[in-house]
Amino acid sequence: MLEQDLRVYKCPQQFIHFKLGLKQANFNQQPIKFTLTLEQSTSDIERFLQKHNYHYQLQKQLGLLMVEPHRV
Image: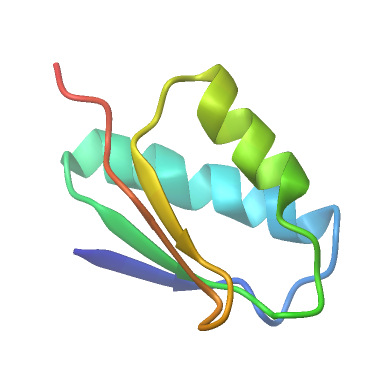
């Protein structure tokens, strides 16, 4: 499983690094775990994942987002 810490970024950099991490996860066909700050909204990220039919699990209390790559 890949991991990426997004806590050091603020929007829009957070969303850009999220998409780069997701691209890497798809390329490697591995799930990815993102670490997020509790204060920042995840609505843009969730909307993107839903729009592109990703399977994901968000644990807001822990600041964790796990995303499965698209399977070919």
